[in-house]
Length: 163
Image 1 (spheres, one colour):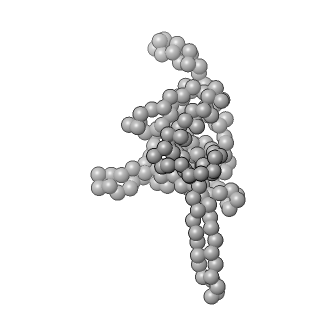
Image 2: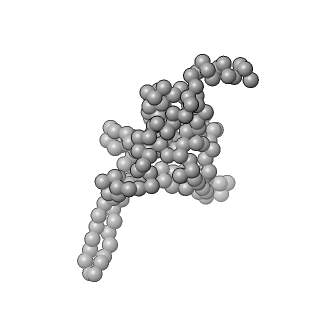
Image 3: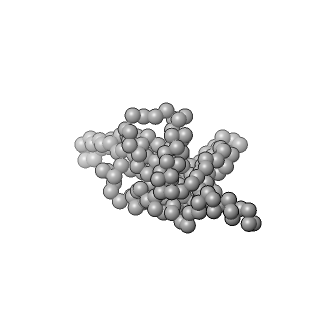
């Protein structure tokens, strides 16, 4: 199933909040004006990117023979438009990118540190059946990377009062 583009981001944010709750991390969704989507009780800033599975067709000639093949992938945009409406790289103010790959009714989650993504304009994850060892494959379902000294909501409130 392919989700409507306008609902895709909202669906991704809700899924991430659900997964964070499962590992006992409290979180809030931030307004669009922030440079990241979700803030957690262990002071992590998360940028959520969600994509449906896409297929790219390739055709080429080699030694007079025609070849063609398909490659499945998920594509994520990480750019902004300048005043001339040109795409420019975006260096997000976040700690992790959560890349959600939707295929039919299932999610694959890649929890990738910002240092890996840096300011790439587009991020592509290829289907593991096609390319086994991609740059991001070691971050598949690595929700444990987000468990960095989480504070309970009560502890967060107490720390705020003491300051």
